[in-house]
Image (tube, rainbow, N blue to C red; front, top):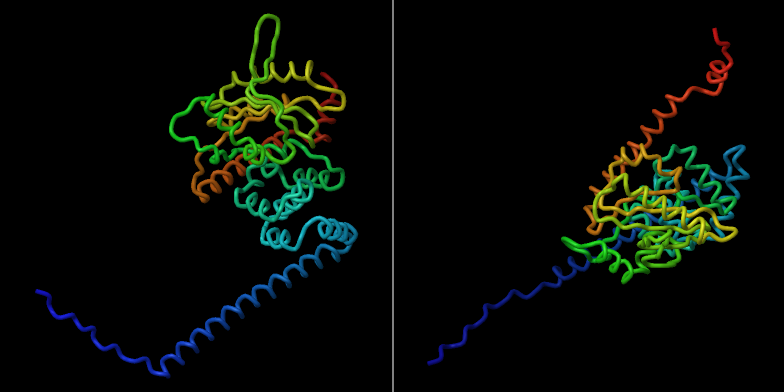
Length: 333
């Protein structure tokens, strides 16, 4: 037996005053938001004008400042400027601006590079400001790119989709499946040459994991993948590969090949003591799973501070040219 339908209680009818008050609140909020946006844009335009004025009208630097404005205005869009201006460090801002110009980054790419802390992952960020300034100046004036602008540490390979345990062949296969994304992480200018490059010496065959060519560096780049942490023995293998490539694969007009050892981890002190830069070898970690942004930022900050402290100590420990001349000029008793 069905019961009687339940009757809904009578709802109070909205008064015209209530509806009017709600409309007024909405309009006031819209006006407040619009005013905030306008204030923000006005402040942005003021900061841009102030920055340009400082760079172009600062005494002896006026001509140099005019060159900066002229160059950037020809290469970068207004949207690029909006991404670059909030960056606080001058070297950081100059790095992104020049890389945008040389590698023709879109605004979206620039935004991604900044979010992934590309500058902090380059060797350039770990150099004293004056040395970093010289390299950026060379890139601006001579279109000359150095390995410190190209290579980075760590490399973010989360796009490979590798989880838990995997082998070197899995890592290599995943890189080749996602080759375009991998090259984008390496940086613009890399061209894929070979996988498992066969290197024959006497009766022995060796196989280089990946071989690339970098257009701006004008040199071959050998890449070895390691699942374990970096071991000093890895350098001997890479040196052998580089010497073979230099002898058999290098063509006129190219620089000597450079090697990149990508490993699961690296002890900074070991890498420093081996002085690998003089051997044209770079060591970098790769991350197949991204840590939280704050953790990555802190890690990169510690690495930068450690390197700068080491460079400062080395500089202090070296005698000045004047002192060295006095010491070498002393007569033996």
